[in-house]
Every structure is written in C-alpha cells, then in structure tokens.
Length: 273
Ligand code: DGL
Image (cartoon, rainbow, N blue to C red):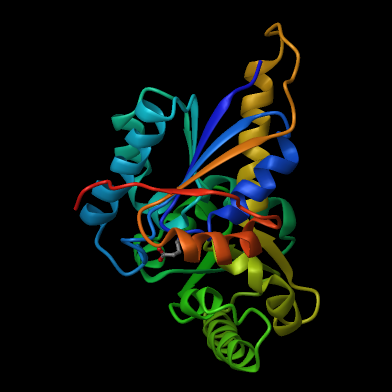
C-alpha cells in the first residue's frame, strides 16, 4: 500500500518538512508544491493566505491524487488550516499543533519562545496551542530570516547578527514578563536551516524545537496507523514530484539544500491569481 501524500508550502522552505517525512515514510509517494510566485505568505492577510493555500490544496488532491495533506507552511497552518480542511475531502495536518506538542514535551519550566513570520505571530496560533497545553508562550516575528535563508546565508555573519538581535529582544521581553523560557520553537519552514546557528545563539541549555520534525512525526504516526492492516507490500523508495508556481530553475538549485538531496525535475504550474 503506497499512500500519496501532498505537501504544501508557500515556497521551497517546506522541503525541510518533506525531508523529515521521507525519512519516516520511505515508501510513500509525495507531491510537493511550492507557491513560489506568491511567496512570502508571512506578510499577507488571512484572507489572501487562505485563498492561495486552498488553491494549492485542491491542486494536490484533485490533480495529484493526494490522500493526505501536510501543510508544511507555518503561516498557512496558522491562518488557513480550517479553510483547507473545508475545501478538501482528505485528512489535513498542519505544523502548529505538533510544534506545540513537542514544546510541551521539551519544556520543564513551562515557558516557551516561538519565532515565526509576522502573520503567524499576529494570528497567535502557536500561543493558543501552547496555552491549551498549559504552557506560557511568547512569540516574535523575525521577518528578515526568510530572505537571508533564501539568499543561502544560513551560516553567514549577517544572519548570525540578525538572529542574535531578534533573540536578545525576545529574551529581554520574556524576562520583563517574568518568564523563564527553556525552549525555542522554530515556527517557520526556513528556520530549520538556521538551526546550528540558532543553537549557538540561544542561552545555554535552551532546547530548540524544529516544527518540521514534529509535524513529520505526527503525519507519519497518522499515516502508518491508517495503513496498518492494509494488504500490500511497500513499493519503496519514496517517489517525489515537485511543482512550483515560479522559476523552476531557482527551485531546483536551492531546493536541494532544503531537501538534503537533489530535487530533480520541477514542474511549473499556474494556480491563477
Ligand atoms: N513558509 C512560511 C512559513 O513557514 C515562510 C515563508 C513565507 O513567508 O511564505 O511561515
């Protein structure tokens, strides 16, 4: 039994989630779409993000036969999960709940920090998911980090300085509120590529949670659970089809950095305006 899993992101940052999924579901078929023509989502309104995300979700389900959808984009997960779930007849998983769950498992103090895009932070989706688990959460938008990663500056002095400023501000705000955070959630597809840099920047002992890993773990649990008992041999190794709404050359060039292996041929598609 080989499930087809649709994975959606606003760009190719979501390949970090796909990479984590492939590790856990090596026999599945994957269709990945990066809505690169309309990136970034992180600075857009809920209405626009939902419209864009629903178009991608429908493409994956209706045209690529996805039986499950993983919304790798934190911004779309935060602002459009309901709209996507209403628009398609398959199970849809976002990254926010698994990220909050991993934060709960990691934190001893019960105080966590979240860094994400502007739109994700303004939605307070992570804070709500953390509060529902008895955690106190402080969120901060770090809008400069996405373009720095897109530029390939994942281990660059400029990125290190930008990250240091953001995290110093966040830690100072946490201290002012009397929080004792021991966990940092990376609430954006692009931040896992900065993980080594961020781990060097956070105060000693602070745990760093990668929402890509947490989401892939949750998705694999659901999909493997449903597949259990279904007859058929795995037809292994994972097949990956990638689609983008803008420059496939850039996707092919930079995508391999996110996926950890060559992305292969990327097909250009048009989802409309
Ligand atoms: N994929 C987005 C996220 O995870 C980051 C890039 C964007 O702003 O579109 O929030």
